[in-house]
Image (cartoon, rainbow, N blue to C red; front, side, top):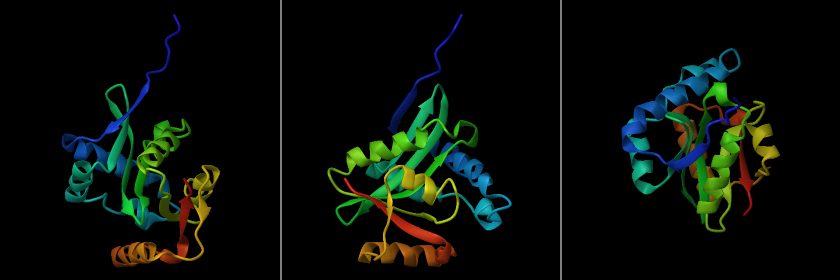
Length: 168
């Protein structure tokens, strides 16, 4: 008997899933071990911020059966949406779950661009997003410059990062 794989359901995240999302973020960060150990050891997104994004409608999950397989967190930025975080359970990587979540965010952008900031040389970061139609932004907008300042305050190495945009 041949059974079809469980469907992937995209839906808004629920407040009761905040710790599940934080655990998923921790698991995904383990991909950075040996490459960027500080990123692998970094604390996940604070629960109050996740709760705020859930209330604002800026946090979607991909669910397979009873498992939250991935999430994307986003917010408004200069007429479009800024993707703050995208994580997929490592065991489910390569199934286009993250790409589908980005497409769902693009639908919510109402014709505005999608923007994100990511590591330039990490294969599952900038090269991945380039394959999905994102292009490197050479000149930062005021909103992007403010995000860069936020990143620096968190201790991120902005020399290793790049802003990217996918036009609507």
